[in-house]
Image (cartoon, rainbow, N blue to C red; front, side):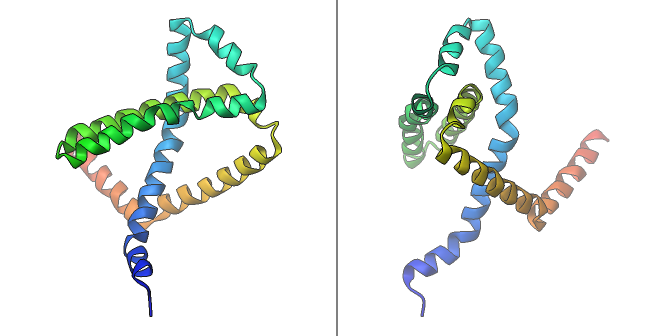
Length: 164
């Protein structure tokens, strides 16, 4: 006999996995272009001196700096969820998406700047290798899923119709 928690988990497991896979896929595809865009913006804004200081940080401080954007955006994301709860769904989702894109760009750039220092910490280097292997499997399973293939076929059909 299953417990109520097991019943709930079995009901939401598939959508949660899809959502997580899509989130990872967004990070995968957005990481490099967003980091490059932020680097170009930083060069124009004269932020190179700050970036050099970040590159020179020790491993522990670099690790802390990497998580500053996530912590800074947390109140904004909570506020966006509050807006969704108030019925302002479009505004709330727009703010969440903007915060996600901005957060990904900043973390990607910071990771690029701090990766050499972070990899000097043994536990981080091991966790990073595991993360990359796990992420690769998740993305591969998403891209291999029947839902993804059906979505790609539908998108290709829509593009063909649009070009006519």
